[in-house]
Image 1 (cartoon, rainbow, N blue to C red):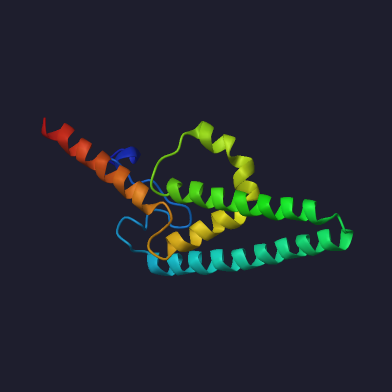
Image 2: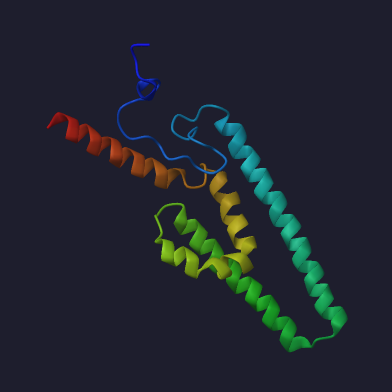
Length: 152
């Protein structure tokens, strides 16, 4: 009873920020990190396949409705361009912190280009947890700043 509840199980210094689906297991690659990475890779791949099937049904619906070649080309081009832009935006988001206003401005684009976002998750999860590089860099910087502040 001599210790306050606030001081129990707390370490001094900065704490790692949790990553979606991984928590803080990315710090030491423990707690089922490899299994989680495999699950994220498989899950995103399954989601990509399911999404492409949904887009195929939408394309077939356009063909059945006989909307014309111009509208079909526009829809296909829209999904292709939005998916490419969403892939690029998601991929850079794994290595650079993005401004909140940028995220909100691109929300519609990322929604339409969901296949690109899922593809970026799949490819990044083959090498590391998506966003691990960004969080590891920020965590190392915060620990170095904390260590420098304690020495002075």
